[in-house]
Amino acid sequence: MMSLNNKLDSKIEGLKSKFPYLTLKEVEDNKSKDVYERFVNWTAGEFDLYLMNESENLKVYFPNGEFRISNFKDKGNKGFIEIKVEGRSEKICQNMMMRLEKLLNHVLNFEYNKIY
Image (cartoon, rainbow, N blue to C red; front, side, top):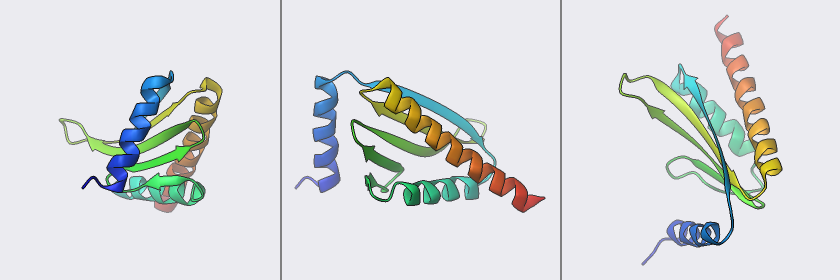
């Protein structure tokens, strides 16, 4: 039996194939795992009224699009945070990316002030 998340993802992929989608992507250097966890936590709180999936990464569905926040390491074991926004409207995607960048900057400033 197909899980609810897989059904939802398959329906969204079907919609993406019918409508043109714009993708914006940003990768930020992550010096601490706490920064990623705090960013995901604060983002989930900021968008708590939207449908979201927190199984592996944070995936949030907003009207006419979605965004994903993930954490990965490169070959040199250096951590990165990836923000990927997809949607049908360039303006909506840009506005969502700006909101997420502001939230990430706020988390980074919080982490910086905590250290010093």
